[in-house]
Structure formats: structure tokens, C-alpha cells
Length: 83
Image (tube, rainbow, N blue to C red):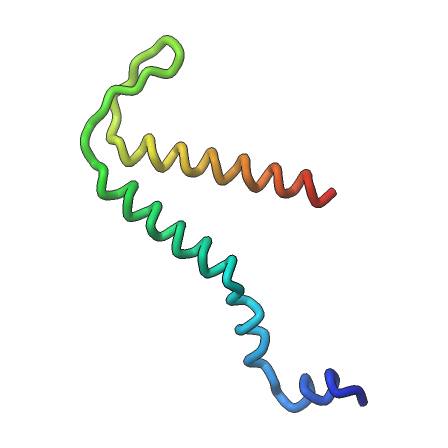
């Protein structure tokens, strides 16, 4: 058996958790939490003009929609790059 196989066989399952917590993932999780706190702290009603119609809605909904659209665009761009 190779050293890698023996460490897996002996129950070295803690390394999988350590591999999942990379500095980039921790930074993205912290950024997501700060973004959500910022979004839900801004609850006042605002008027938003999208091309022609003017819509009145809570600011947190507009910020959340913008964040979700940005995340979807980023995911799409990253998926296209992997191909």
C-alpha cells in the first residue's frame, strides 16, 4: 500500500474538512455574510426607474435582486471559462 492509501484506510477523515476550508472560500463566505447584513439593514422604501417604468419597493429587495443577478452572471462566466 502507498502512504496515501494507508492514511485513508486508518480513518484520516479530518483532512477533507481542512481541504474544504481554503482561504478563498472563507473570504467568499465572509463577503457573502457582510453583503447580506448590508442588504437587510437597508429596509426603507425607494423609487427605482428601470428604463421607462418607475417602481417603488424596499431597498433590500433591490439590493438582493442585484446581488443574485451578479452571482448568476459570475457563475455563468466561470462555467463558460471551464469549458
